[in-house]
Every structure is written in C-alpha cells, then in structure tokens.
Image (cartoon, helix red, strand yellow):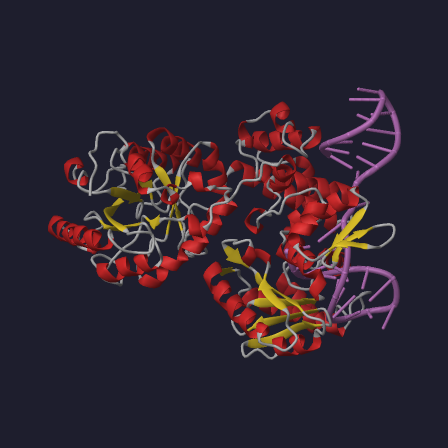
Amino acid sequence: MARPNDEVAALLQEYADLISITGGDAFKARVYEKAARAIGGHHADVSKLDVKGLKEIPNVGKSIAEKVVEYFANGSVSAVEDLRAKIPAGVRQLTAIPTLGPKKALVIYQELGISTTEELADAIHEERLRDLKGFGPKTEENILHGIGLLQSSGDRVLIDVAMSLAEDIVAEMSQVTGCERCAYAGSLRRVRETIGDIDILVAAKKPQPLMRAFTELPYVSEVIAHGEKKTSIRTTKGLQVDLRVVPPDSWGAAMQYFTGSKAHNIRTREMAVHKKLKLSEYGLFDTETGEKIVSRTEEDVYARLGLPWIPPTLREDRGEIEAGLRGELPEPVQEKDIRGDLHTHTDLTDGLAPLEEMVAAAAERGYAYYAITDHGPDMAMQRMTDERILAQRERVRELDGEYGRRGKRGGMRVLHGAELNIGPDGDVDWTPEFLDGFDLCVASVHSHFNQGRDALTRRFVRACENPHVNIIGHPTTRLIGKRPAVDVDLDAVFAACARTGTALEINSHPDRLDLRDEDILRARRHGVRFAVDSDAHAVIHLAYLRYGVGTAQRGWLTKDDVINTWPLARLRRFLDKTGHRTEGA
DNA sequence: GTTTTGCGAAACTATGTAGTCAGCTACAT
C-alpha cells in the first residue's frame, strides 16, 4: 500500500501534467508540482490532517488543502476528474514515449483521437500523421523508434551496473588527448538507488576528439545526438550515456549543473535570479553586464549564492538549501568513517567464501571490528545447527585473537553474531540463553511477506522488543525492481526501534538498499540509530558498502547516527540492550 | 494556485543544446 502522502503527491502531479497538456496556466501547473513534492516529502501523514494542518505545509494553500481533504473523504477530487474526462489517461501515457512530449501528444489526440501507443503506431504506418503541422517524416520515424524503446525495456538500472560502466567510460575518456578533467555526474554522483542514464562531464578546449572517441566506444549501439557541446549514445544494453564537454574554466559550474538534481538546480538558479545573476553550466553571470563572476569550482558557485558547498547526495531540494542558508547543513557520514561491517556471511550458510577469507578481506579494508552473522536454524535450507554455529564461534575467537593484534588500525576485533529470522509471530531462532552467547544479532524478515499491515507491524515491533535483537536487517525486505517493500507501519517500527535501542540496517547490497533514503529521513526524526552493512555473501560484496553509505548520506545521516562508525566500546554499550551483559571477548 | 503584501492586487516564471521543421519541441540537470 502506498503511503497516503505518496498517493496525494501522485494525484497532484497528474493534475499538474494534465494542466500542462491542456495548455493551462503555466504558473498553476508549477504550483501543483511544487505542492506534490512538498506533500510527498512531508513527514506527517497527510490523511490525518485537516485543512488548517495541511496549509502549514509550504506551497499548500486553501485550494490544494481542500482538494486533499476531498480526496481522503471521497476517494477522488472533482477538479482532477473533470480534467481526466477531457484528456484520456492514454494521452498522458503517450508522453512516456521518448521524443513525444505533451504538445505533440495533445495534437495527436485532438486531431486524430489517438490515445494509445498501438493506435499511434498504426496511424504512423497509415501515414496519417503526415498532414499535421509540425510533424515530418523524421518525427514519425523517431516516434516509432521511441515506441520500440519503451516496449523493449528502457528501465532504470541498479547503481552498481551503472557505476562500473561509468567508471570504465571515465577511464577511457581520460586517455583521450586534450581531456583535462573527466568525471561522472548526475544521479550516479548523487548515489540514487537506480540510474536512468549516465552523465559524463569532460573539460577540454577542443571538444571534437572527445566526441568522436565517445561515439566510438565499443559498446555503443546508437548515437542519439551528436553535437559540438553534447553527445548522447545508447549502449548495447540499452542504457543512455550523455557526454558534455565544457571549457576547463567552467568545470565547477558544469559539475554543479550536471550533478543536479533538476529540482535542486531550479532552486539554485532561482536564487541567482533574485540576486540579479544568471546561473548556467558555464558559470554564474551578472544579468545586466553579462560578466562572468565565478565558474571554476562548485564551492565558488555555491559561495556566491550565499551557500556552503552542498554534498551531491543532499541535492534533492529536500531542505538542503534552507539548511545551508541557516548554516545547519549536516556533515554526512563518509565511507572512511565506517569502522566495521556488522552483517556478513560465510560459506557455513549461504555465503560463498570461508570465514578466514572474509575476515582477511575485512582486515584488508582497514576495519577496527568485523562481525560474522550467518543464518540461524529457522531458515531450514541453511542447515544450521547448534554444533555448527558453536564450532564457528570457536574459530571466530581464534581469529579474533590473531587479528586483534594486527591490522591497519592497531588490530581488528572479530565479533561473532548471527542473522536471526523473524518468524510470522515475531519470534526468532534459538533460546534466550543460547542467544546470550553472541556478540550481536541482526534479525530480518525472510518469508511471510503478505501477512497484512497490522500483523506485520506487530511482528517487527515484537522483534525490536526482543533484548537479543540489536539490528533489524534489510527492514522492508524489498528487492529493487523485483519485490516490493512489505506493507508495514514504518512509523510504528521506527518508534519501537528508538524506544528499545534497536538499530535499523541500511543494507548496502545494490539489489536492496534497504532502508531507502526517504524512510531513513523519517526514521531519523524518531531518534533511531542505524547500521550501514554490506550483507556480504562474498569477498567482493564487502565493497558494496559505498552504496549503503551513499544511501545513508541521502537520508542526512551523520557519523553519530551510525553505530558502526563508533569506537568498539561505545558500540558494545549499544549492543547491550538491557545493560546486564558482562564484557565479552 | 500560492506567497507576499497589506486586505485586493501584484509577483512568481531555470537555463541551455540538439533535432526537426521552418519556429518550435523535447530533453538534460
């Protein structure tokens, strides 16, 4: 079930789109978009607010507040229904076809009555678009190509897939003569969980050799656009990559522009306008004289706007501008702050590498501590027994002895934990007495995802109340693009975590990234602590931590919010939920 | 339509590139 705020945000966004498509007042469309964003990002449940409460949300006035109340009272909003009656849903969907926007979609609907992709394809084949003003043979061809792309996939890809391609392209472009600087930007630099296209920025005096090298990369399947300043290609796997070449002294302004987000850029450019300046990818200019003021570094650009440099992961127009103006921007947790990984597996259960290899790889990463947390026996397919886990513990204690005295930070302590299974009623593996023997326990839901909201909420809360459960693993159990998050009252779970001293995991696996940024922002308001873990099932997975850290940053977390940045002594005090445990290994 | 200003009316509009069709549209952040 979608969060009520998200339902309303989607409805208001649709209304804004419909206003744009029908050629309505541009200001009005913009206001609805702003209100949709504000409500989507609002911390309180808007279904429980009255008109007065709703009006306290920025960019929500009387009219929109009343529409929200109407929506929750009737299940629909008459103004939206009126526009829906004029413009079939299909017309809005037509704009999902690449190269077909609202203007052309409306013309196609009004002149030919077409509102589905199939009808449109037929009309093109029957050459019925030819007579419309603004439509030529190339447009027909592009629309057909766009329909093909839409049907073949066009989906966003997981961040690790995009990252490895981007790093490869950056390395390739950096080799080209004349390339002074090269970096990836866009949603990848902002560490969004999925990536729609890859943005590569190059600083060079002469763009042509770089543009040519770019279009000649081995995995280019199609050159979408090929200009002097910008070239776009599609890879053989269907991912679009945009290359932008700017003069070297525009680097800072160009990075600022190309990193986005779009909403963040609109805000910064608005701020420039208010100061009688103009901000573009080439620099910050005086509007009247046209004189360039700054452009070399992002810091220069932000500073001239009266802002501190804003970390890319915060640039989503979620309050970072206001916080920056107030001097209250958080210092986001960094990968180097992480002292240890608290959720990892070995080949004793479903991991691929033996304990010794995982521990050695962890030490290589410079960790001060590292926890092994294989699955308990309740996940029957893992074939765990008391004997097997106790034998592992013995070996962990030996390794702790070995590694405790060496390593990059004066020794790495090896902790013995487990990943417990939260059963349908909230129970976990093993007896309390047996669980006493672990240094820490992660507990996660692995099955029975569709119990219903109330039962699932009770289940999570019960796990939090268990004195042996320290961390809730991959809390919503989603798999990006494959399995939705469980329907649970997250605010109730967050409150339980804060009350019981249970941390929430930010699982760094690119398939999961769970919790996600928006949930982290909400959980943080409850005073919850977090653990950024890799959930590594192989040595190479330990490096996924970078994505978890990026996600934590997007949730505005600082070092202090994340328990595995803490020194071991402080971590141990946190892990001792009842305050009764004696100091362990 | 909301916010700001000062109670009805004014102000609010991001910027630039490439493509395609003959002035815009779509798209990128």
